[in-house]
Length: 140
Ligand code: GDP
Image 1 (cartoon, rainbow, N blue to C red):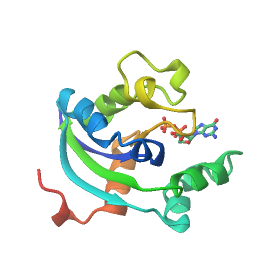
Image 2 (image 1 turned 60 degrees about the vertical axis):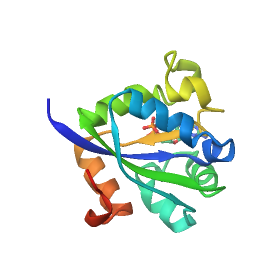
Image 3 (image 1 turned 180 degrees about the vertical axis):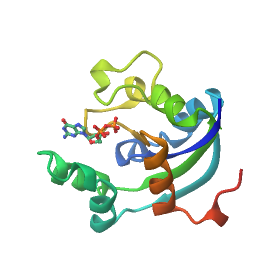
C-alpha cells in the first residue's frame, strides 16, 4: 500500500477540553506520523473556503461558526494508506454511530462538534494540505 499524507484538524471542541495530546496519542498508536502541526484560529473566510463544498447544506453557517469558535490544531499525517486509516481512527461523523475506540466515539460532543477532521480522498488531501501548509513546513 502507498504512503499517503492527509490533512487533520483537531476541532475547537477538543482544544477547549485540552484533548490535543489524547487525540495525538490515538493518531500515533495507529501508526500515523504527525509530520506538520500548527495551532491556529481560523477566520470566517478561511472556514468558509475550507468547507465550501458544504455551502448549500443547512448546517453550513453553524459549522463555520463552530470552526471559528476557538483554536484548532492543523496537522499533516503521513503513513501507509493514511487517508482511509485516519478516517477509521476518527470514526463516523455522527458520534452515536462511531465505533468503540475511535476519536469521535471517545471525545465528540455532537455531530457538529465532533473533535476531528480528516481528508476523504487523495485529491482533497492534496488541496487541503496545500491550503494550510507550505511544503517546507512538512517534515517527514
Ligand atoms: P466528515 O467527513 O466525517 O467530517 O463529514 P462531512 O464531510 O459530511 O461533514 C463535515 C463536517 O460538518 C462534520 O465533520 C461535522 O462537523 C459537520 N456536520 C456534518 N453533518 C452535520 C449535521 O447534520 N449537522 C451539523 N450541525 N453539522 C454537521
